[in-house]
Image (tube, rainbow, N blue to C red):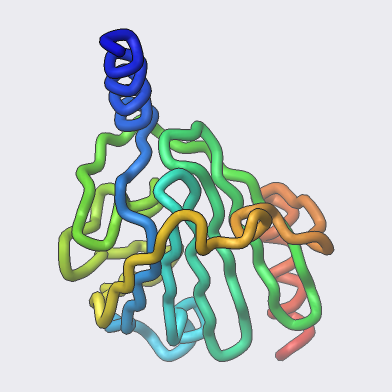
Length: 177
């Protein structure tokens, strides 16, 4: 029996060491823009939802002409950003720098938010714009309530690198002028 308790204690310690959070659920945020020029409004989401099962995380941003999904695993060295805009669906893979984040009432902040997160808000710098996400609601959910594939990459997104994404955005910008 002593061995069973020892094994459970080691497993619990490893879970925390791998960057996992005890909290599982959904957090919803409103967006407050900071000193944004008229042309930069397209970069700012109108709504943001964060989901985590304590191991994986997913951020869904919806804007006027785009949808962006950020997906990753707590403690991993990479995460994915899925862009869906103007008929294009692309996937960008990014590296995570080692950042130590502390668990908040709405869970462990994902890597892109780790440095700017607090209990009630997240400061975001995204390309040319800065905005603040203000926590509106958080709802805990049991880990077993998530579907098995909820945090998997969805099909239909083309892998792209930063140079390719910049070229695509520039081409779309020129065609809309």
